[in-house]
Length: 473
Ligand code: GLU
Image 1 (tube, helix red, strand yellow):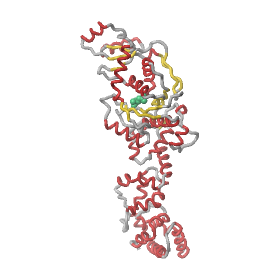
Image 2 (tube, helix red, strand yellow; image 1 turned 30 degrees about the vertical axis):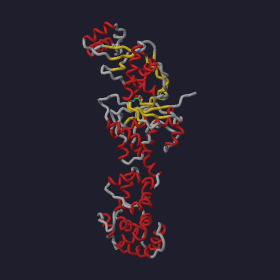
Image 3 (cartoon, rainbow, N blue to C red; image 1 turned 45 degrees about the vertical axis):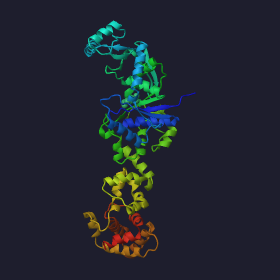
Image 4 (tube, rainbow, N blue to C red; image 1 turned 90 degrees about the vertical axis):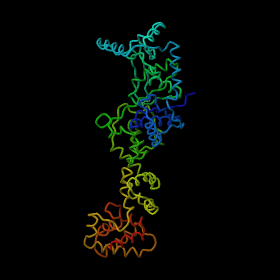
């Protein structure tokens, strides 16, 4: 029986969840889901000094927002397994696979200098591999404390078939007996990551290619513990336009994208396209990605973060949503803009207001700006541009003609009502559509930055339109 696919995302709360981390999480999620498996989270909080509760919370909120929380609902903390990690160290010492090393900082420094001078690979030279009990006692008597090192093969190579990078082979002489437990009794990253991945039943380790150098070390841990190896997949980095990711390129908290008015669906779509493609499709929702995603098809070369492309995706997803779906997401943005919703305004927004502007929006805030006029009531405080339009020769009279015609309309007023009335007025007066449309838009909304008058009249309805027009004419 083949094992159920299990992936994991293992963020360190020494920082926030940035764009690169979010994409790693996404690929882990998609691969697990595509294979009917589980996607787990392990918060790697073993660096006690640099991990913070705040970062844990920010990472969790970021993943939740993206819909990338663990499929089993468990937010596992690595430090919860500390006892298990220490026991594993003990076991390896007893089996002669790991050993106490008392080499001091100064001695290590000297050793490295000597290697450098001879042009050799800088590595721990294994000098305490076979200390006798008496030698250990003597070091202890000097007041030295030991770190624990894992015995690593010196001959041969370590090799794995990376699901993204292809075969990677590393000569073992470039590795050394690395530290698996520090002098303070805390096991190290390369040791615990292998133990935890095994304990959690992880079948595919998908992570950034900055971890490639750690993989051979972790493979030695698997081997020493007698565990089966998972498949490794090292995903290339995301770069900024000028090389390194800067804050502007998303090297920041993903929640800032939420605050800036991006939809999580759009960010996910954008992120999956950084390194993975499905023919020439651009807009690929999560369901479709789950159907087709394969980590083996992820590109080997680095991708470049492109804000303009992200905005394009966001615009596509905004237009896919209905007003009813958009309104709850818009509420915090209205609030931030100091615009207070009430049932009348909600009615305008849901009955055409959002629909009339959403296709031009790149971010949620664009809808807020474009619909802000619904929150204003006549009489308006007109700006310079608006005042000059209303004072154009004859425009007030045109508004009165329109108001008169509107008054006589029976039943609901629609787009068509407006074109019928204006069409007739144009024919009667010899004027152009704009001679009615421009002042109407200003009179009804207080601004020139509003959707077409047909939409506006239909949304406000006859009574409200007449009220607004009467305040001018
Ligand atoms: N905690 C590591 C990091 O945040 C990831 C470890 C891994 O994925 O193996 O870089």
